[in-house]
Image 1 (cartoon, helix red, strand yellow):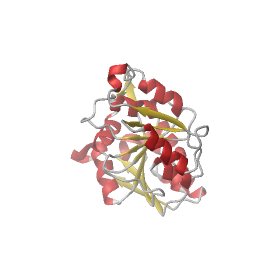
Image 2 (cartoon, one colour):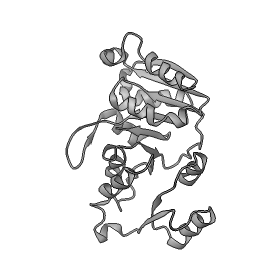
Image 3 (cartoon, helix red, strand yellow):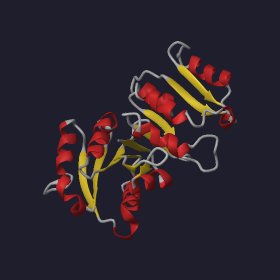
Image 4 (cartoon, one colour):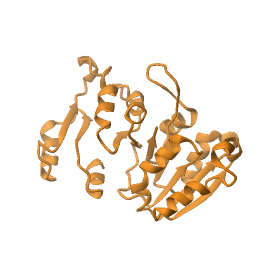
Length: 239
């Protein structure tokens, strides 16, 4: 998926990381696609990575590489694999890098050019950053739905007509956009976003990522944590 997206957007492909991936196999694929060893960095993480002491340092290493890329693709945290602290890696990809991350569910294939996109909008700096980072995807979509959950709770940041300002901004970029509002009720904000993504049949969710305080690296906000744990659709997330 990473290589397909790179080709679709004419992107420079810097490198890839995987678990137990044979170097010869991965290098062969890259060379076959036209990437030279000089063009493409290749980081292969062995299954026994914890035993060689890299587990502690991988979030910082990932964040450092991500800072010089437009986008980091990373898999959803999988509790069955403890070679790395995957939740911390995902957090580092967008909380420490200054760049967006595209988080992919383990059992879902990303559409190279998503056609229906939901933007979770609350008027915050993080949400604005995510919308701007997602523009290359939004401009190629059939429709983008700006979703506002519990508009009254965010009245100060949303204005008198919640969602219409950011919708107008997207429309100026040629994006076909609509606005919808929802009340969280018993589902909570994260559950409501997920339900709306399914109702809209979206193939990409765009949202801001939030952190409240430091413990290990960061404690993620409720909606962010919910989406990363329960996601069934690729999420482009920015901080």
